[in-house]
Each structure stands twice: as structure tokens, then as C-alpha cells.
Image 1 (cartoon, rainbow, N blue to C red):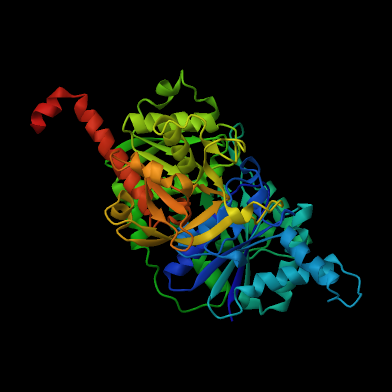
Image 2 (image 1 turned 180 degrees about the vertical axis):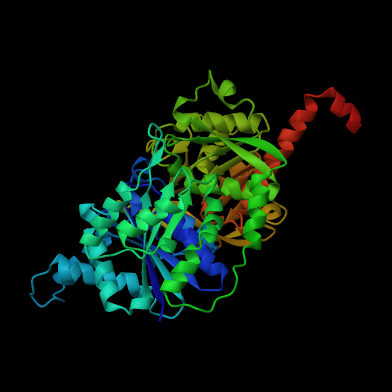
Amino acid sequence: MAKYIFVTGGVTSSLGKGIIAASLAKLLQSRGFRVTIQKFDPYINVDPGTLNPYEHGECYVTEDGAETDLDLGHYERFLNIFTSQLNNVTTGRIYQTVINKERAGDFLGRTVQVVPHITDEIKRRMLLLGNDGKYDIIITEIGGTVGDIESLPFIEAVRQLQWELPEDDVVVVHLTLIPYLRAAKELKTKPTQHSVKMLSETGVHPDIIVCRTEESLSNEIKRKIALFCNVKQEAVIEAMDAATIYEVPLLMLREKLDVICMKKLNISVYPEPNLEKWKGFLDKLKYPKSKVTIGLIGKYIELQDAYKSILESFIHAGALNEVKVQVVNIHSEFITKENVIDKLEGLDGLLVAPGFGNRGIEGKILAVQYAREKKLPFFGICLGMQMAVIEFARNVLGLSKAHSTEMDAQTPDAVISMMEEQKKIKMMGGTMRLGSYPCEIKEGSLANKIYRETSITERHRHRYEFNNDYLELFENKGMVASGTNPDTGLVEIMEIPEHPFFIGVQYHPELKSTVERPAPLFVSFVHAAKVYSEEKHIAKNPALQDALI
């Protein structure tokens, strides 16, 4: 049977339950265990697909097309495995399932209640990944904070599982905050005590308490927490703020979080952790040999989590290239013809980010034009590719009113238009092209050089596509479709061969980038930015030019 670790949080949100869960999973995986992680979110939305990025950060998409919480991105990046529909469950999905059963008569007329019907469905989903023998350990992150009304059914389900499953098959890890009061120069344990008390009042008692802190915890403070929270002192884990989330597994290794969990789970035989690749990545990340500056052109830049996977992909690609990638956020809504040079001058590369809707579109188009004309390395993702197509249509093909029907339904030149099968769908949510699709790449193209393959798969999340009616016109003028879907003929990759590095993709390569397997497009884009930066530096220094000659 699989064993289960539940990760809860208290005191405040955004403490990093997802990072702690992923770090623990990484340590257990490094010791040879088959591990996966799942996230239970307390909001009533069926999935994050219709949530505004300002509300909840990016919507992460899995191989099988599930629109999920962004924490699943952390899980995949740390573990180098794929997650699925089963790895993210919301309150909305739980209630939807139970209500559908009630409508179908499955409860035979009985009164449907939170306990046992909702909690039974939660438990069923909590145990689902462990039923087929594929994993040794399932880590379940409970979203929200202990004490939230909406989290109560999940906590109650954990309580029941603690009672129903063998004692050494369940561990509860509780993440709390130990605030440091600078005026008093003291770490305060009271918030943690109250959080554990609140959790205990629901019938769930934590086995391990992980304490997020800015200052190191003394043995005296650990002993105090252990005494008042009724855990062993060794089970009070210090989680110091780290310079990068990728240091957290090593911090947790030092605190023996994985060893304590295995002890609680009655696992007595395990090998030493193999983290050599991870440590190698960290060394390159912490000690880069040079720096590049990439402009991220987006419309949700006020919230960094809106582009979380993109930012993490730059970290992975930067480490592989041994450069520090400094990302400059540039709000597309405020780019104009008058200021575009001032805003973009000095960059070594330009990425136009994904998004939806009309806001900030013209700014993105101006940014693409700048990159194309100035020979600045350019990379467009999803909407970013579409903006590159529109810019090229307007300024090279002479189609001055070219647009996407998403923004202008009446455009005479719809170079980007909705997929035919989507035109009759009115309901939002689950109506997009989602998940992994194949792409055939032309030999000799930039995409071919980047992937070193002619057949790939990448993840999608969009409704609108390149209009193939215009393809011949584009290719005659120098923008070519170097990647297409072999089944539908839909364009996946557009590039300009005569540009040093100009590529746009309809899919989301950032969703498959991991520490051990960085996304090839990001690696090549960062390399192109590095070359551009070096050439720019040489051009500005005559002495270097003479030395090279």
C-alpha cells in the first residue's frame, strides 16, 4: 500500500506549502521512492481555467489537459515527472461530482450532507493515486489556511483518514510562521501555538511542524514549540528564507525532514539521497559567468505568479548557459510609438508573453516590431506568437488592418482566427485546445536546430490559431511556418530565417521546463541573448575589436 503525507498550513497564506511539499517529495525521490504530489484547493471554481491571473496567478496545464493550480508546476519542476487531472482537485469539482451523483439517484433519496458524502468524495480522491501501486508515497497539499471555513471539509477528511488508515501510513506536516519582531529582537512562537491548537481542535494533530522563519531557531525555541504543540523536538523543523526555492530541498535535507517522515511512516531501510544533478544545477545558478537582460512584455506583470513558469524556465535555461537572466517586466499597456525605444533599448532579448483579451495588445505589437527591425532576439509564446504574426502582416505584408478575431471580430484580414470547432461553443471553461499535442518540425529550420528533432509534443492552452489562408503570403515574404500539427495542419511555430533569432510558438514550452530538463526554446533563446550581449559589448569597445582582429 502507498503511504500518505498531508501538508497543511497555518498563520498566514503564501508561506510556501507547495515548495515544502515539493522539496520533501524531491528528497524522498532522491532516496529511491516513487513519489507524487497532489493539491486540494478550497475554492468553488471547478478549475483555475476561468480565474483571472490577478486572482490566482498562472493557470498551469498538464499533459492530459487539466487546468490546475500553479503549485503543480513546482511539483513537476522539482520531481521531473508529469502530473495529471488527478493531481489537482477543487471544492467545486468535489461538489460537482457529489451533486451529479445525487441527480442520478445514486444516494437513493438519502439526505446529502457534507459529512459523510462530501468528505467521502474528498477521501476517495485523496487515495486515488495510491490505488494502482504506481507510487510508494503520496504527498497531499491542502490549500488555504487552517481556520478557513472553506478548508474544513478537507481537514475533516484528513482526520477520518488518520483514523481509518494504519497509524504508520499517515503523516501530517503543518507549516507555520515564526515571526521576528525587530523592535523586540525576538522570534515569537505564539502564532504557531495558536495555529496548531486550531488544527488540533478539528481532530487533526500534526506529526511534524515546519517553521517558516527569517532568523534561525534556537534549541530553546524548538523545545518550547515541541512542548506546547505536543510533538518531539526533532519534529520541529526550521525553514529559513532561501535565496532561491531550489535551495529548499537541501535546507530540508539538513533539517532531516525526510528522515523524520520516514521514521513516522515506519520506513527503516532507505539509501542515501542522490542529489548530484540538483547540486550541480545550484552551483551554476549561484555562480554565473555573465548576465543577460530579457524584457518580459506582458499585461499581468504586477503579479509575478502570473508568469511563474516563464520565470522559472529562465532560471533553468540561465543555469545551463551559465548566465544570470535578469528579467525586466514591461507592461505592454504603456508601450507607445513615442516611448518604445526608451523602454526596450538596452535589452539583450525580448519575450512577448501569453495572455487573453484586448488590453495591451498594441503595445505588444510595437515591441515585436522593435525586435524584428533591430535584430533583437525575439521569442513569442501563444499570444506572443500571434502578435508577431499580426505585426508582420501589418508592417511587411501591408495589411494595415490585420488582426485577430479575438480582439477585432470585423477585421478584413483575420490572420489569427478561432478554431472552427470552437465557434459554436458559448460556455467558458474547458473550451480551449488544452494539453499535449504533436508538432512536426521542418528540417533545417531554427526550430529544428533548437529541438534537434523533427517530431515533438508540447502543451497548449488557447482558442485562436494562425489562419492558414494567409500562409503562402507570409512564407513568400519571409516568415515561415516551421512547425505544424501533423493531424490538423494547424501552425505551431512561426519564424523569420533571416533574423538572428526570431521565433514564435502557439504552445507553452515553459510548462515542460524542469531543473533536470530545461525547455530547449528557453535554452536557445537565452544563448541567443548571451551572444547578442557579447557582440554588443564588443561593438562598444574598440580595444576589444582590435584584440579580436
